[in-house]
Amino acid sequence: MEAAALALLAAFFAAMWLLRQWYRSRPNPSRRVARAGEIPVGGFLIFQYPGNENPCILIRPAEETYLAFSRLCTHNSCPVFYAPGQNEFACRCHGGVFSASDGSVLQGPPPRPLPRILLNRLGDEIIATGIAKA
Image (cartoon, rainbow, N blue to C red):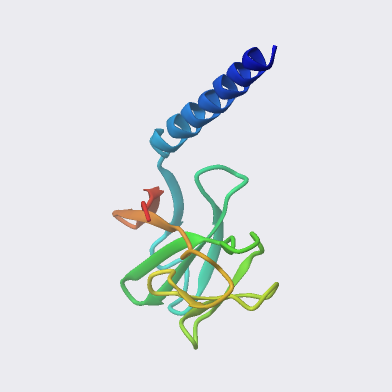
């Protein structure tokens, strides 16, 4: 009886691992985020990617520069807020701070950088095309 229960438990965890691997390997859809010039230099726009339950933030730190990151702090999934003067994202829940240049952690407790959203520009359209692998 114990052996059957252990085998069933092992099969369950193996299936969960395979499902996780499949989910991670799926290609992300392309999604229009904004038009170039729609956001002023130093401004930002909140959007969802790859799904409607995934808040992200698009920033425009310079005239021809657009960057995007997940808006969820990697510590406790609280929203981060853009501070253009400091070139940072700040999490108000526990004091985490991230670089707005690359999403790296500048101040703990977040254990990982913010996931970066890959962008392409097609004419004046800014398109999210994926999530960078850490």
